[in-house]
Length: 241
Image 1 (tube, rainbow, N blue to C red):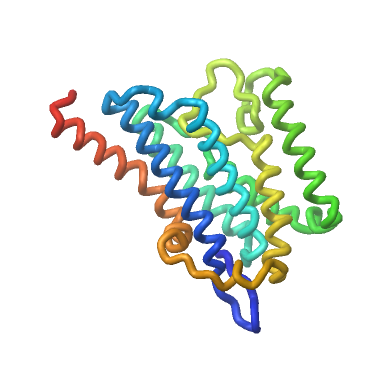
Image 2: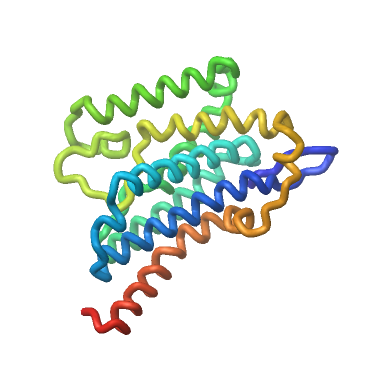
């Protein structure tokens, strides 16, 4: 839920829902390209190339950031995190059935972040608001370098960002460095919740992307089976194997 109180009433902020909707649309397009390459014989560059690889992390980062923003509006981030964890475990179970297990994808990450923020909310509130974005940004950069260049042995540290040899996950967004993108969202969300942004931000209506953003979890859970079915139908109708 992303609602702000203005004039004594609570209403959704279409700009935030629309940005989330945009990230969902791009995510669906990204997964469609993956299915076309993996199952329909499309050229590999359609899914993996420098431009698309960068965009993938950009819109995924936007999605994670907005989840952090929404944490400022949630009545219970712990309950929200538990619901997201249940959805994440369902994704793991479903992807195992098709041999492309997602061990720690974006939903697993968001569940961790929501639970962390919900359980340690008092700690994060003690961080000076002016210093918070600097601290989070430095931690983001430092942890990104750490998981990129520091070698840590295998085991179960893949959830933190050190996958180790032989680890494979069809969707992988470890705690480091992405938790700090989420926390930057919680910092920005405090200002948004207070109504500190310009009036048009709260009152502009965006009719197409905003509804998509409001249904992001359902779309996330449903889109890949639908895309897979459509791609396999295309392969069958086009005479492929």
